[in-house]
Figure 1 (cartoon, helix red, strand yellow):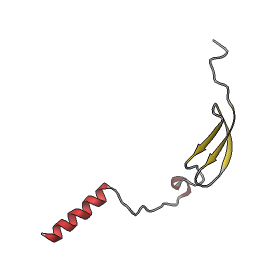
Figure 2 (cartoon, helix red, strand yellow):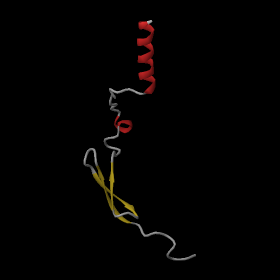
Figure 3 (cartoon, rainbow, N blue to C red):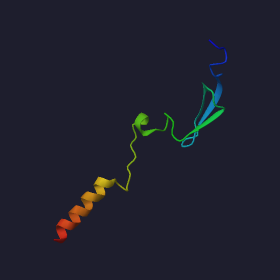
Figure 4 (cartoon, helix red, strand yellow):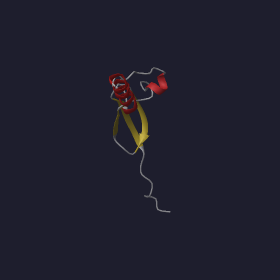
Length: 71
């Protein structure tokens, strides 16, 4: 087996873009920036954020209800 086949792991600083949390891990990259970390992600914190826009299904049902009342 070649000795150079495995990449060299080094200490890497990870910075969360949402809450600013920093932590270190070992990686082949120099520095990492993530959008959401385990400290501020809704699935891990238990805090759900409501989205006011809704999805495709909600918009379809709204238009369907409006059409039913118009006819």
